[in-house]
Image: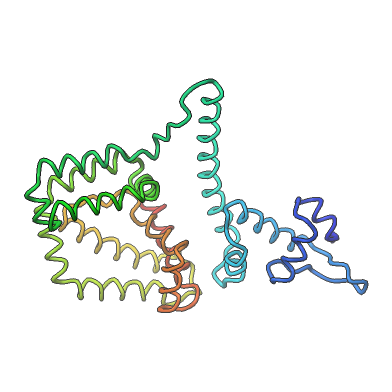
Length: 293
């Protein structure tokens, strides 16, 4: 057993903050002595270690508490996910350190090439100039096209991160978009076909999602759950074939992130399928994405 002062010295977390963790129910002491001293055992320290990992990932305390109290919480799985996210954070920090070092050496530290969407936007501008008829036909007008383009530019960093996650790089994302523009008429015809059958498609997707979330006590990586995800994947691929669109190599990884981190997805899916459903679905999609590349 360790006293609260010893835990503070060991972890660098202030005694005051440990009191606050106790107050909100995030980390309770293992026992409180008759004299009122808080004591923490090894299990409590392991929980605190998880909290520290979550803290490094900027997870809000409220969300940490929900995660740790979830019936689906798996410590080993959580450690693997935290490792992956921390590695990504480390890589990003290494990039920033490299930029600082170049600046200190007199180089240009304003180069954020990994998030530069200039070529992507240039392709769209070129398409507008060379295919004005298609722009008007499918976007309504050149002004409407320009509005969409400006909206994308205002979200450049967000789109860049999504592109890198789904396609591996902005260059590959741009190439996929070029291909889409080259087949725009057939893609729009495909959209129309899908639109006409949207009710059937949505009903099928909802049914499969319901199957995934039918028993939240299961392991999201279990064979029967993954079989349902595969069926969903096959259906989505068929729709993308109809559209002749490249969905990228990490489509389901991106979808998993929405279920796991997007508050709107959490609210909607937990309400529809039960508390913890969004996290469960996200973990099922994430496992599928990581094991079917």
